[in-house]
Image (cartoon, rainbow, N blue to C red; front, side, top):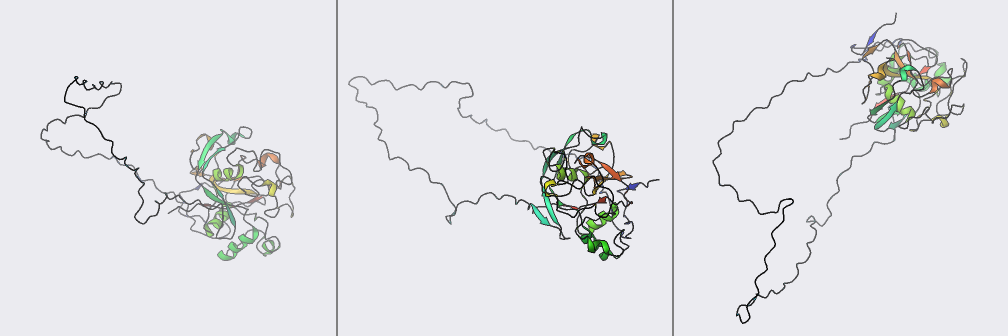
Length: 350
């Protein structure tokens, strides 16, 4: 029987690693309190004479015509006053600060860089703030309904985490490594291949170790398909071996090194989001979650028994390589066709 994992658990023990203290605490929401406004007693105001209103024409009101002075009678000594035009006033000059400099322009917020390097040395790509279309009506029931989701900007690893990078984590925590790392053969011979046989808890442990996190399911899908609702990361064309690693049988040479499928990268420049390995996300899996999915920065269900995996793998066909395809896995199990990549929040601007 699958064990129920809850995000309210004070700590998580990494399976096979013995790394504890990975708290998935949920911040309590402070209860709202009724707020009433104090009524300030009004002091008596002495009566004042009503102000004489200025005479202005109201909307739709016609001003009375101005009467012209009566013409003088012939022989009258009074003459109309002669008006001598005075010198024209010079145009008002624009004022400047005393030092003669022009006024400063309003400061604009600096934009985050399009690519950064994480603490583990892995390049990360910016996924900009905005809305995208999540889900599909041409897939499984758990991909429906199609809905709009708004996400804040974030960074995601340009490539999947490799054997070489994960080996440093294994050495640093000095715990039992996953399959393939006991004799250090895998990270030495294939350092640029994405790490596999890693369960969800080991993946999140690595991300925390380098100051990152796993991407949410919504973040992963936006990074893969962009804002235009494409079927695959590269567009709507069916995949070929030039786009992704897929449709293969299990073997030692099934997994490809990172960064050698440029034709299959996403609109943001993220590689291998289709094929090669399934990738862990931070969300619990719920096949009906889209019917109640929050429209802004969704984080997934609060609890569950399985974690969401995305992207398809080297043994899957084109159907599972679609960016909207969803599947799941036990967070404690190790599989040969599952890997991961990390994400990171954009630092707050001062």
